[in-house]
Image (cartoon, rainbow, N blue to C red; front, side, top):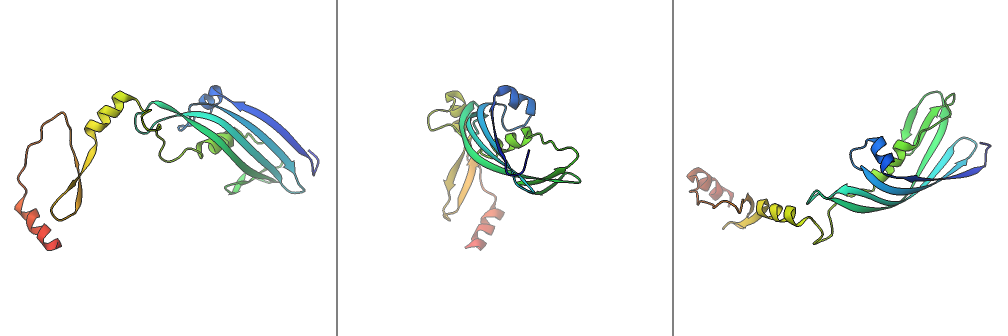
Amino acid sequence: MPVGTTTEHKYRLENEFFANIDGPEVQRGKVDVALTVKRTATVFELNFDLSGVIYIPCDRCLDDMELIIDTDEQLFIKLGHEYKEESDNMLIIPEDEGELNIAWFLYEFIALTIPIKHVHPYGKCNKDMSARLQQMSARRIDDEDDDIDMEFIDDTQEEEEKPTDPRWDALKKLKR
């Protein structure tokens, strides 16, 4: 590719791509990729435009949920003697190889768009799983010292009142 030229490539990543890449975060999806490669005197500049949808498990009910992908990423490639990652978006690849498989980079760009907490919109979770989660969830309990404790309650079993240990009561008095 001569210096100063630009090429464009288009890809569609589907379920087969995600299954073959064997990454833990995403197993299914349909993402369109528009890749623009620009060569300068010393660097190849790769600009990725990714848009589509992936399917990931909901953190709340574990059913698959759709997540819309729309991101732009950039990667810079230099030719050198050995493979080296200089930064998150700068790579040096051996000049004698002259090839770069971008599959894992595409997967990482997609996986990085997944929010830490990914749940269905309110009311869209699996009803059975939501009911079971509600039964087993932690609830806030305020005690007389205005401290908030978390207590796990199983609504399917009756709770018995347990006497408190007097040693803990004495320690609570020290806290005041």
